[in-house]
Image (tube, rainbow, N blue to C red; front, side, top):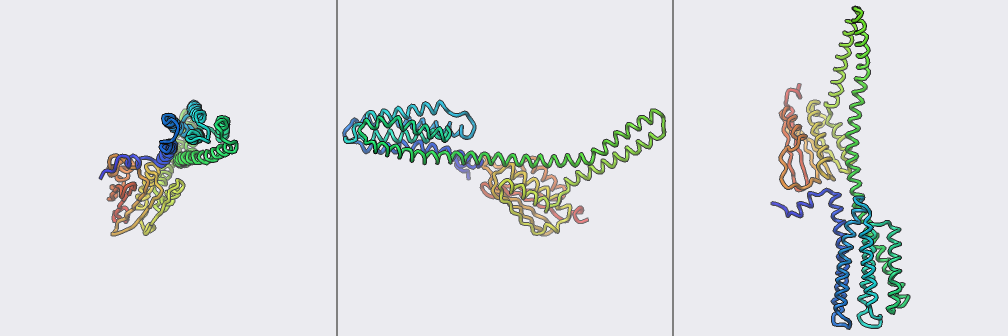
Length: 412
């Protein structure tokens, strides 16, 4: 059964993308809260003295301020994540509109002794508070604090002129600072969480690349140790053989014979080095794969019942399955858990690898898709084995390798 399209899109996102999407829409909801809070005030003022058109005009201004705050959250989050420069123009334009709306609300408010005076003051305070919260995402903490103090200072004189007691003005300013400070802390912590998740994802990819680079460096170092001295010897003896041949000395044949022997020894040593990389032990491969996965914050578990009793050839073949499976977990999933399970039944070794964190795809993945799994299936087929890859449940992937142990190369 096909899932709803939004759910498929959600499952197709990586963990950092999901975190950022959650944070982004949480910030948008904060912007929407502002007009919803004041809408109740408009409805509550119905039937009271004062022009209703003025209240609805203020409400329209609040809707515009809320939309500007939503845009400011969008560009501010992008700046916080380092994807764009600081949105100074949006900060100034939205701030100018918020302060202008607050001043207009306070200047048109009747004295507090009259009915209908609370709503304009509420509009002014909430507009400034919500703008400070939105602006805090695109500036530093110090700049946000200075901007909040400066904005509240602009509203102090108009509030006093409306007849508000100085103690009341101080109380409103303190409440605005406390509420705005708590909201700013929540907003910046949410954005910081999204940034940390992205950084952890980048660190994970970097760690995987470093592991590959370290393995290549080790391989090149082994080849250099094996071939460096022999190639230098071959070059010297070949040069000596050339000089002797020009002088028609019979020792040139001996030198070339020695060069041939060194070349053959080098060829044998290179084969031993490559065989050391190709011939793997299952238990060693499982330990290495588990260490790499755990370093990438994947909870890796192993269930090995008869690994020690397997022939060396079978361990080498299954070791390649472990390598490819661990690579797939790191490259093609956001796994949090991974399980390697080995059992021997009826002369057949069965290795299962199961992990979660597989993103949903529009079309089902073909069995054995990908050059790595296809090559692994061919390697198993050469020894009479089979490879099956399928999703066991939504978001999970299971790889099953079956290898008969009755083949001649395993029993001889």
